[in-house]
Length: 454
Ligand code: NGQ
Ligand code: ZN
Image (tube, rainbow, N blue to C red):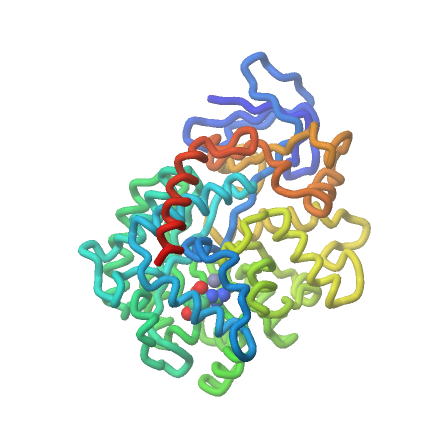
């Protein structure tokens, strides 16, 4: 048993003071006491919060952060960025992927995320042949999680087509591609890799997008792997919306909701471009909208119809997607700021007479846990011990109580205010640094230097 004592903590019923959180050896919270004093053996922190889950990541893309900001000829777009990204994947080795993924997971933990859903599609060797173990790359993602201690929901991606209408894969997509039998082998291997991790880690599936699958394949895969998390990219770019409409006779979100049993196991990544009826139907389905504001801004995707979605009772969470920046506070701030800029208004996401910071934070705790299939998101007996502590001595937080802590952190601060992070009770970050920071970063630097040289 270890015990954290917090001067202030955010509990399901609201802020409490004098809080003891008792962590069980299995990584769950055993009990929560309030209005008490610290015991001598307790670890004392100023401000304790549940730590959110990051619901969308492509770890390898972290290594090209900042390298896609040179404008080429013509108009830069998501599609020209994708060309660069494909070129970048061409010779990443399993060692490279493991080194990059460990760095990414470490940065996520240091930023305050306790867990991540890794939407993993770089499966095969250069040229597209299977590795000796078809799940080699999944095993590397799992090995990174074993080293960093992050809570992993691993989502091997089913990527079978090069574009809407069942187009064949492009040569540059060869390392991603699987038909269903090959995918089933991959999933079996990935399941073995995940079984070696702590029990909070789990497996789900990710049909990449409507354009990278077909209706039949999507139905077959989601039936074969029903019952766990199902993530899919959808309606991110207008070109994709038009292609799907021309092919399937409906816009992507409407088509998906009409043709598959979309429920709380599903997470629709981006869902940026929706009509009002699609927005309402998605909200009512119980599926999570997986919003990635920093990447969506970077790639020029557009702005999610948040007001309509919230009015209809929708659930959302955030992901760092391309990992061009891994920054929890910034991700939430940009989510709200995109709405402010487009609506020419303030406090767009927040209901009346409430805190912006608290509203955003509560929402992504719930949405992230649901999307990862992770029993976290609250400091309550029985839940996983996904926790973070903030620096009560920091100037930005000095003297603050309750929701104003969240407002100050998310709108006027950054992730340097995060001092300690626990994932399922595993205390991996202290003093703002991951326990293996030096080793992981040194290896990552060497990997990057080699990649940049080629
Ligand atoms: C991805 N990126 O899966 O990383 C995609 C591009 C593709 C985003 N959807 C790859 N933002 O579409 O093939
Ligand atoms: Zn993505």
